Image (cartoon, rainbow, N blue to C red; front, side, top):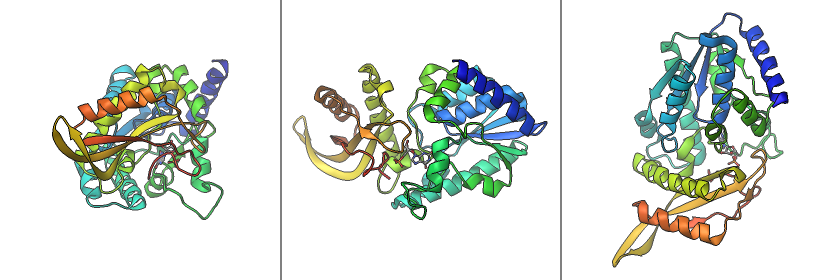
Length: 319
Ligand code: XMP
């Protein structure tokens, strides 16, 4: 892609100019944006960059493993893998308010990131995969400057606390452009094409109090859902698809046993930039097949529902 090749070269010069001989630290979230930012910065300044991947225990199935392997083995980028799942679960214990969850995770994330950044020798610059829509949404969401719909945890908090200069090479880009840039940089298609994943992770896909047991159930169900979407050849038509584990139990029957288990919500939307979205019109065979697999294969779930809400009035995530 000619445009992206040109953008890449220009971005690399800008990064070199800004950073000089300084050291840069970059937080990897497991998502596409921070990964593309990291690989771009690594091309620009090599081992002046260190990446920190805070594994909150709230990632998707196999996500942590994939990120660590990709960065260490394929790209040879120095990476600190901070396995902090227990810490996050402990901090979230008993918290059921969505904003309190987000703030708890955001604050702890900063603490943990700062600790590991220091241990890695500190840095002069903090790199972030902030995109253009992040900049817009964090300033005024849905038009009202005084209304915070959701406090995003990927913008804002870290820089203020760490008193570091920011390197944000993706600040002018939209998601599809970031993906094109990622391909240009040699990131695998399957990684670059992955659906967006929110900073607070699975915590905001478990309405009510979060626990490791619930996260494990959700991870399994979500993986089956995504596998079925890929098998049906629909993954790339969808902006984001994920499962939500509801804090509601209903009665069911399995064999000749009565069950009393959780309801799982399935969400899939099309969107250009996440600011507005339409629910994805799966056919009924797909939904039925997926529901059956999830109920048969995931213990703890005995009912599946599909979310047909668009944004607005719904948001994409449930919290
Ligand atoms: P909503 O739910 O607000 O989501 O319609 C819009 C897009 O933003 C993602 N999202 C987040 N991303 N940190 C992130 O990095 C967050 O705190 C966060 N909350 C929502 C969401 O997945 C969707 O793509």
